[in-house]
Image (cartoon, rainbow, N blue to C red; front, side):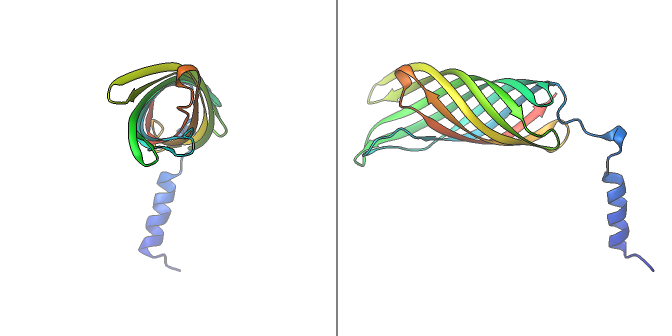
Length: 185
């Protein structure tokens, strides 16, 4: 029985691509990492006839993998101006900055790594009502996502988290949905 060219190429690719024990990738190794992502923030505390637009933003993080199933990181998220409207009329705009120290628990340690996240930190907002005014306060972050390793060092990430601020920024709660890339050293 004769194999076609496609079958030979497929078999050759499978032999070359299959890792041996000596070549096994260590996606859950200890060490530092960096990440950069785009995000969209959806403010959740608007009442009745108040509407707050979604905001696009950026998210940066630096962390250290302490254990195959646990990491600590610092994250910073900026959300661009979002219009605030009351009964259809724009009355102000809102811009926010959130920094948190997070703990991450990884459920799996292979190429695909779902995780849960919890963090504490602070949030600052700038409200422009014709003149700028700023407020700040404590914030907590709860969420989850998945890291998908492209290589042993490069990964793609998607996540969603809920930011719950208190104090002077109480009521600026938002859901953050992020997508981006990371590098493991």
